[in-house]
Amino acid sequence: MVNKCNICPRACDVDRNGSRGFCGEGDSIRLARAAAHYWEEPCISGDNGSGAVFFSGCNLRCVFCQNREISRSGIGKAVTVEQLAHIFLRLQSEGVHNINLVTPTHFSEKIKKALLYAKSEGLVLPIVWNSSGYENTESIRELKGIVDIYMPDFKYVSADLSNRYSKAADYFEVAKKALDEMVIQRGAPVFKDGLMTEGVIVRHLALPGCVEDSKAVLRFLRRRYGNAIYISIMKQYTPPDFEMPDELGRKLYDEEYEELCEYSRKLGIIQGFTQEGECVGESFIPKFNLEGVE
Image (cartoon, rainbow, N blue to C red; front, side):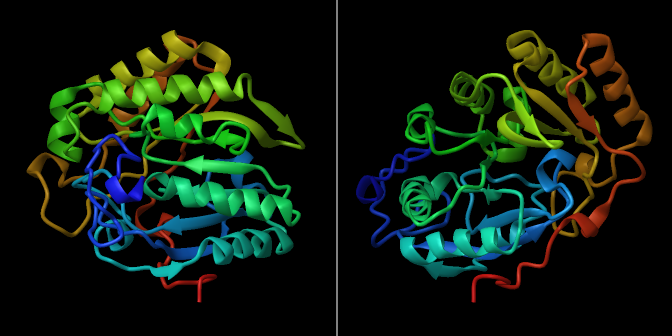
């Protein structure tokens, strides 16, 4: 498929052996970090951390992206399928609770091969697919039986917002179909010793000035999936220091976040996560210094 790439909804049809897709990546898997990560939801990070593998590139263009260093700026090192498999096995040997694949969509075919190889060599940890939610349903079907926990974003309902902020006017329709497949695959969430081992966690980052669209996201998730998923409402938006629309140039007000949390309670959402305290800023963003890759 990389010879005429249609792995993601962009369907670039470029030959990634010699060109780069909309995601900014060619044929080689590139990583920016592979190490224990302690800032995910409690049932993912636990006490020992999640084995987070951060992939370079992204098929969205979120104007507020706080991982821009790796999503657009080219930071990352190429690895082979076999090398990636051994990174998974090394993380397991270090005692992490799971293998957490961060922004993996555009490398999904080779990641699948690496996971199958690692499993044949003794990888037994749950596999977390941590994505933007902007996925091809067909690509998600290819992961059936391999991925244990899907952890997608669900960013917008509004096509105007998704086009303005992520250059993806079709985000809602695409993400809805992908999430349907994720829920069908995994079914009801399963926990062991307080850690999720199977299931779906849907993340929604609250953006300043977008409370009504965030409410639409929560309504949709609750009505369509009920207790089949967990919902994580995040308040960690921090205005980045690069050019972006003026309305996103401020932090999320506490009142906006509290309004969303209260609305989620009115909807009957009890399976989920909220964040306490102020916006966390840069502390949630790891250093993309090739730790665990070199």
